[in-house]
Image (cartoon, rainbow, N blue to C red; front, side, top):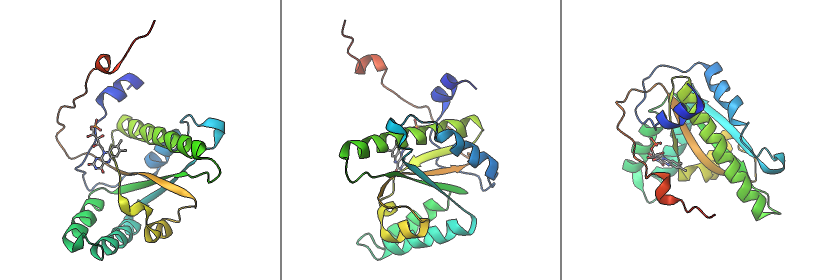
Length: 183
Ligand SMILES: Cc1cc2nc3c(=O)[nH]c(=O)nc-3n(C[C@H](O)[C@H](O)[C@H](O)COP(=O)(O)O)c2cc1C
């Protein structure tokens, strides 16, 4: 699959088969993630691959956080089930430069690009993925469980596995409608 085809045919996957994902495929996605452009080569990203027993423990940590919050146990259980719906999660954080809001912003942008690399490579490998946000990624309990370095901010939680869904058509406004050509 060439890059253009990968970009055009990638889609978010929300329903996964239980089949495990070979570690070499996950590592391959991450190897290509780090080729994202990043200003001053700050290489601001960290990735935590969560699977197997760790995934169950992670879902328990999140369940506990949410069940004692105002959201309550129903929402907590729903989130726990969602986390367990994919065989692999990858938590992605970007380094915060406490001396420079600009660098922090650039770091966040580069890390977002790294995530897109992961989504595209996963798609090319026949895997399904979705980039999700999760408020709990920035809690002390989750950061500590994932050994996330400080200071950093969460950019996304990638769900990864083999797709078990029928794909719906994707919709985008043509770029033309969002573009001003100055000459
Ligand atoms: C920064 C970011 C956060 C996202 N967070 C969520 C999320 O929390 N839950 C979710 O279901 N999808 C989430 N998505 C996936 C989008 O909903 C999805 O990309 C969008 O519907 C377009 O579908 P496509 O990826 O198939 O083109 C997120 C995507 C991005 C880029």
